[in-house]
Image (cartoon, rainbow over all chains, first blue to last red; front, side, top):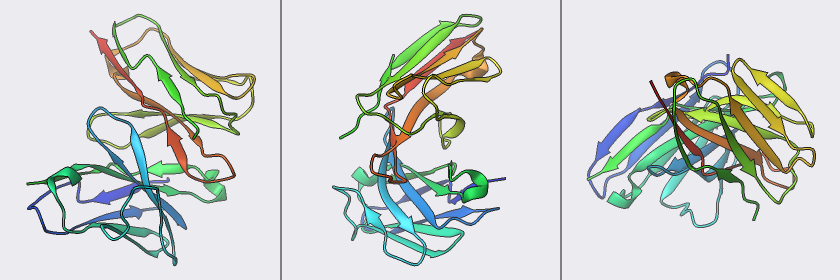
Length: 117
Length: 112
């Protein structure tokens, strides 16, 4: 149990285009999901907290108009990178927080590799 | 700003050797977690430690939470090539937040 999927697993896009990444909790409901980015050989940096039915909370320094987050259901959150640029190339990872039955642990998706050319 | 300092940053050892990875902070945590991440994949939770002084074992992995709940260690006995990966410690931010703060990680390579 407690499986989180991400789609796509990798994507290449041209500079100036937008890319949408999906994060799904497959066998549990998640009122809260988190979006991280990870640069090569570095740790995970939290970008934003996504709450079902409300606006996302962004970390300091993260542009909310560039990284659009939508948490439309208890099993799906999406991250849209708008007007992508090469510096947005990174590994994007989501996590979903389980409920009491999962001890409120965060379960991570397999990540999405974004390359902007 | 609460920081989790991990050491060493890199570790390359031979199969069969033992190793210890450390996670230190000046902050007190209600709990601390250890994850293992392989290249191109998301982190996988190994263990959560909650009680000061707690020791948890997961096969050849032994996790310890410091008495003051400020630090933790991960000890691997008789390391195997399959143990290769990035080991991350993480803890929830202060103030009851659900946000996780991650250490920079220890990149472990176990050579056959």
